[in-house]
Amino acid sequence: MMAVDMLRLPDQIDETYANLTPEALDSRIMAAKAALGKSLVVLGHHYQRDDVIMYADYRGDSLQLARIAAELPDAKYIVFCGVHFMAETADILSAPTQKVILPDLRAGCSMADMADAHQIEECWQVITDRFGESIIPVTYVNSTAAIKSFVGKHGGLTITSSNAKRVFEYALAQRERILFLPDQHLGRNTAVGLGIDLSDLTVYNPHEMALYFPHGEGDSRVILWQGHCSVHQRFEPRHVERIRQKYPGIRVLVHPECMYETVQLADEFGSTDYIIKAVAKAPPGTKWAIGTEHNLVNRLAQEHPEQFIVSVNEMVCPCLTMNRIDRPHLLSALENLLAGETTNVIEVAPDIAEWSKVAIQRMLDIS
Image (cartoon, rainbow, N blue to C red; front, side, top):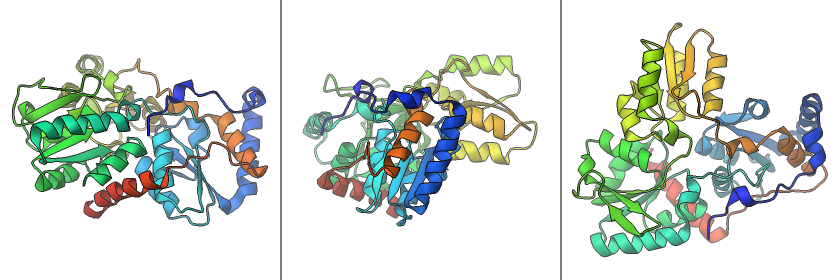
C-alpha cells in the first residue's frame, strides 16, 4: 500500500458551504448533530482549530480518541476531526458496523507520509543483511496503517509519546536493536533518556537506502528512520535562547518530536497530554514557553489566563494539514449523513487492519 499525497486530492465539498456565514455554519452543525443523536460521535484532536474542536464530543490525542470510539458501540458514525492516519487507527480499533469519516480527505500528515510500505520493505532488507535477526521494529502511532501492519507482522509494536520509554525498554529486552520510525527525533530523545549513547544511534535514509552515523559509529542499538514532524522541527535551539532572553525566568516545555538539541535546552519535555497536565497543575503566575502545535498553545493560553503562555517560536504556523478540517467540511460531512450518504469514509483493508491491531495491542498489553 503506497502513501497517498493528501495535498493533491481534490476538495470534495460543494463550494456553497465555503460561502456560509459563521452563524449559519454554527447553527447547521448543531442541528445536524442533534438530528443524528447517539448514532454520531465527533472526535477532535488536541491540535484542531478552536472553531472545530468546540463541536467535539471527545478531545484527545490520536490513540486516546481511537480507543474512545471503540468503546461507543451505539455510534454508527465516527467523524474524526484530525488527520488521515488517526482516522485509520480509529477504523482499525472500531467495530465493523461503525464507519469512520474524515471531513476532508486532504488532511494528511507529512511525517506519516515519510514512510511507506515499499520503503520499509527495502529498509528491512538493508538492515537485516547487516544486523541479522537482532532487530525489532517499533513505529510511532503517527504512521500509516501499512507501516503499523508491517511492524505487527514482524513481531513489533506501536508507541506513543506518552509511553515511549516503557516501550523502548520492552523492545530492547526482546532484541538487541530497535528500528524506530517514522520520527527520528522522538526516537533519539527517548533513547538518550534511557541512557543510550548518541554514538549508538544510527539513521536510515529511505531515499538513499543507506545508514548514516551522525554521532559516530557505535553499536547501532537504535536505528532511526529519517523522518520528522514539519511543525515540531521548527522549534530550534536559537528559539529557546531567544525566548529566554525575551522573557527572563520563563519555563520552556517542549514536545519530544522536537529535535534533540532543542529538548536538551528545555526545562521539561513530554507528550501532548503531559504538556496539558503540566500547565493545568502549575501555580498562577507561572510563565511558559511551549514548543508544540500553535492551536494547542493558544488554547492553553485562553484556558489558563492566570498563567503567561507563549510559543517557543512565535512565528510558527499551525499544522497546515490538520487545519484543513474546518467548519464547512465538518458541516458537509454531517449533512451528507443526514441525507443518507457516507462520504470520505476511511476503510483499512482487512489484512492491513489485522496486523496493525496486533502491533497496537502489543503496546497496550505492556502499557
